[in-house]
Image (cartoon, rainbow, N blue to C red; front, side, top):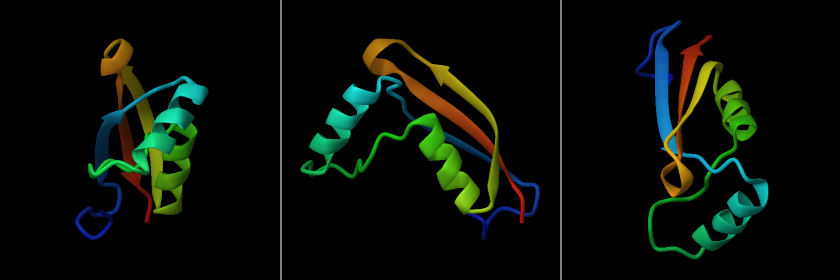
Length: 80
């Protein structure tokens, strides 16, 4: 991502969001055996850490949808 964004560029990510830790843990366990390309459902803290390790700063987190259709939109800015 950093290769295509200039410094201070904005990155927007939308992904499934399950705020319930036990449910997210269980689904992540099952997805390891799935044939789909889905790998993991991230928590807000996990996504924040992942972005920071790659040189981004999370500037906005918004949860959307209801029940099984819940997702988040994360907005981050490139810091390097």
